[in-house]
Length: 338
Image 1 (cartoon, rainbow, N blue to C red):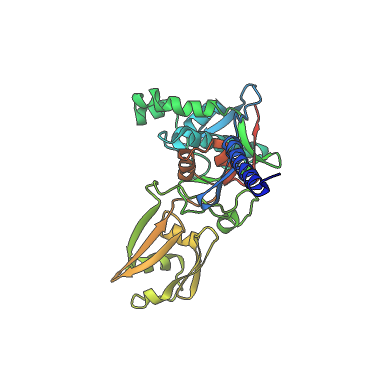
Image 2 (cartoon, helix red, strand yellow):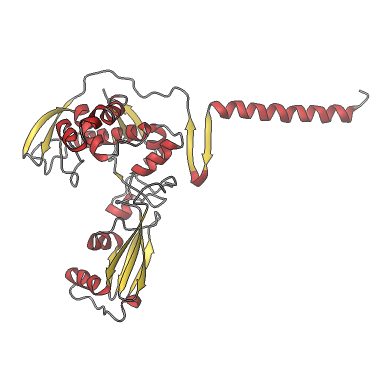
């Protein structure tokens, strides 16, 4: 060979070009792409979890306001839940993720025979106890007939397109907790509810800045704060003049929420402080301004499981409903029940 150096150089360049082109072709169609803040998106073509086509079951729903139990097709029940639990303006992939979470909640109750407070019904319509629910007639009355002809169709389709699908872990329905807005990370279930579930662990949730509850401020007079605290802890030792030195955050959870706050001679959990002051979340910082205490609060809700505004943010970035669910419920799978 007359010019071995030139040949080797050209061969090396050819291999590099082939490698680059191969990478672009391969990762453009499948594989794993990592985006900012450690959310990983699996790009899978034609992924479908709709594998069974059977009749949906009927469940007993305790309507709290009417004090009666009504038999409903579970999918029709979910129309009223999804319309009440998530804004209909959200992306359809976020709505699908919410629909599956709501369906899973019902199945979790059924599998574990949890019926307390329901008068033997499967679920109730009290959002503080189960999930929010509004009937079709109620939605028409509250949101207007125009909404039922437009947005309700969108909500219904999100439920219909995921018919029978639930989230599982070890082939069992999970406890699919969800909430409005995180502060950039979700919480470990043990830090909020004292019980650790393997699929309810802290994960990044970066796409939530558009939420109206992403960051809020709560102000309270120092004297009123002392009154609230003493109503719960009558023997606490705090004073108006020294309050800024007597209140301090001791530690935080992995998700960023206050784990413990020291108030005088008493240690109070961040969750309890949130309840006492009716804060949007337990992720807060405290500043003082003359006779006021100012709480800067991040997020809205308990912070465990799927963030609804996080789901919306992921959907807007191109993630599918299964990407969203697998991100927020670690190690989970999707199973088509009917």
